[in-house]
Image (tube, rainbow, N blue to C red; front, side, top):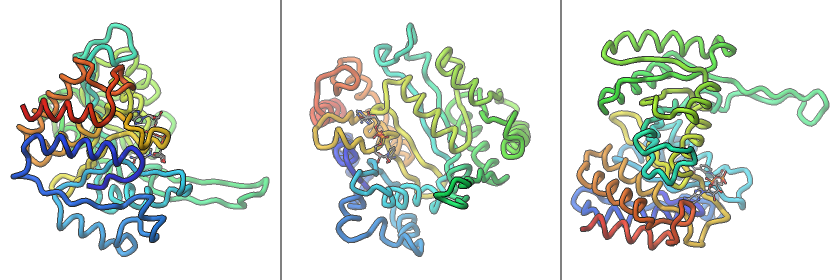
Amino acid sequence: MVPGDGIGKEVIAAALEVLEAAGTKEQLEFTHFDWSADRYLKDGTTLPGYADGSGFRKLESDFDAILVGALGDPRVPTNIHAKEILLGMRFKMDLYANVRPVKLLDEALCPLKGVKPADVDFTIIRENTEGLYCDVGGVFKQGTPDEVAVQEDVNTRKGVERVIRYAFDYARKHGKKKVLMSDKSNVMTYAHGLWQRVFKEVAAGYPDMQPSHMYVDALCMQMVRDPRQFEVIVTNNMFGDIITDLAAGLQGGLGMAASGNIHPGKTSMFEPVHGSAPPLAGKNVANPMGAILTAAMMLEHLGVSTAAKKIEAAVLQAVQQRKTTSDIGGSMGTQECAEWIAQQVAR
Ligand SMILES: NC(=O)c1ccc[n+]([C@@H]2O[C@H](COP(=O)([O-])OP(=O)(O)OC[C@H]3O[C@@H](n4cnc5c(N)ncnc54)[C@H](O)[C@@H]3O)[C@@H](O)[C@H]2O)c1
């Protein structure tokens, strides 16, 4: 458990309470790490063993899964601790599939007219280790009128192929058939031309599936106009980052969104989609449901499915009965909401 900064600490405490109520004591043993802005400001540590990679190897050898709250604090304007801890785990532990279920739990949470829970039920698989977020690039003549800034979009055949394959396997495992790949290959002909070729090749090995394609701009419009058409969407790192926030809007906002950073067979990391929300921190107002649903996702991944299903059912009840925080229309605090869900789970 890495609660991190701001509301990360509050929502992870909430998730832990619900995990314990789900009777997971036999299966789960928790270790807490204080990696955060506080720790960084105290002794300069981001993630111990970051520089030589030993910290990441230790996470892989000693743990089955990692649950993270959020990282980011205005006292660390460079955000170096968040970058090294969070992007460090994603990149250095090669957690190549960022899995984001998009599920509307109640009609009242969707800003679209007449959209029912059954209409918003799809998953976005975002490539998590390459693309524009590789930190490859540079600046030239910085601070002069002739300044040049270059950021490279890195796409490898191996990286593209494995995430597309993951999307098809995920669809098959979850009883879905429609796998849509989104890119901008009409203009990014080299990088996304590779996505096009690999998608066609991989799709040919899944004759039971229905592969399709949309440019990302068209996809954004379609996600708003008719979200019911989607089952599984696979895309690159940056487009995935953007469309998952749009998708969070469809399900009631960032406080509701869960995610997993996965490398099949290896230690994976789970985190709510939201950040540390500094203005909300310490006020007991943050919505804990994204973190609680993330904990359920982690349980599912670890094969503790019964407890995961109990938690999901309790969150659904809380939403339906308005036992929620104010961002989605309720009047509870973070702790009260978590307690209510924990009690339902324990029952
Ligand atoms: N994965 C992560 O750890 C992560 C992700 C995004 C941003 N960040 C960091 O978090 C800090 C704040 O970033 P930001 O403001 O862009 O994003 P944010 O997700 O923290 O907040 C965006 C908006 O959503 C609201 N919100 C977020 N989570 C909520 C919750 N659980 N309940 C109710 N409302 C919620 C916030 O109040 C705010 O209006 C920055 O330092 C940023 O770098 C971290």
